[in-house]
Figure 1 (spheres, helix red, strand yellow):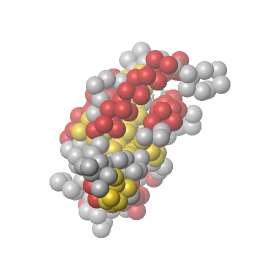
Figure 2 (cartoon, protein in one colour; figure 1 turned 180 degrees about the vertical axis):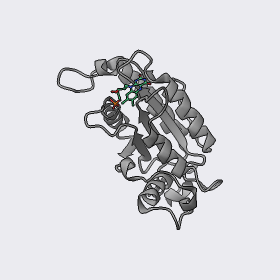
Figure 3 (cartoon, helix red, strand yellow; figure 1 turned 180 degrees about the horizontal axis):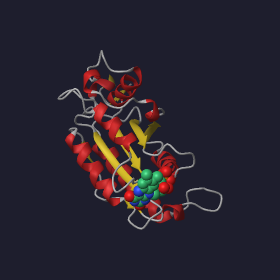
Figure 4 (cartoon, protein in one colour; figure 1 turned 90 degrees about the vertical axis):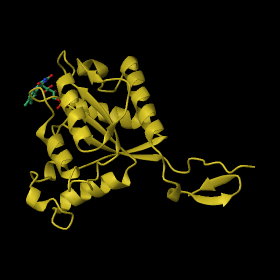
Length: 206
Ligand code: FNR
C-alpha cells in the first residue's frame, strides 16, 4: 500500500495583535480566532510587541539585533504561518505592527517573513472596518516577501457588535468568515516532510 502522510502535529501559527490597550476589540477578535482555529491550528499570540525598539538598520543583522527582536524572529521562523489582527490608526496600521514587520523583513533576502503565508484581518468600531489599514498591511506584508492568504477581504466594521453583553464573541456570520479565512490559511501550509518520521509503509508520525 502506498505510504500516506497524516498530520501528526497541528499547524503552528504565530499571531500579532495590533493594539496594546487593555480590552481592545482587535485583541478580543484575535482571541476568538484562536478558539475557532483549534485544534487544527495551534495559534500562539506573540507577547511583547511593545518591547521592540524602533527599527534601526544598524542593528538588523541577527548578531546585532536586540533580544526582543531575535525572540520575535525565532517565533516567526518556527511558525508555519502568521496571523495579524489589527485596528486602523489614521487610515493605516498602528506603528507597533509596522515596526514588527520592518524588523522581520530584514536582513534583505533572509528575513523571517520571507515566503510565509499570512492571514490579515482589520477591525474597527467605525463604519470602514479599517479597510485602509488592511490595504496598507497587505502591501507591507508583500514587500517583505510574504504571501497573503484568504479570498475574503476581512475588515470588520462596528466590531463591538460581535460581542454579547458579557463580552463573549457572539457573531455567527463573522465567525463563519473567520473560520473560512483560517481554513484557507491551514490549506496554504505545507508541513515540511522533515517534521515527520516514517513509521511503516502506511503512515508517518512525529
Ligand atoms: C483611531 N481610530 C480609528 N478608527 C478607524 O476606523 N479609522 C481610523 O483611521 C482611526 N484612527 C485612529 C487613530 C488613533 C491614534 C486611535 C487611537 C484610534 C479609532 C479606533 O478604531 C478605535 O479606537 C478602536 O477601538 C481601536 O482598536 P482596538 O484597540 O479596540 O483594537
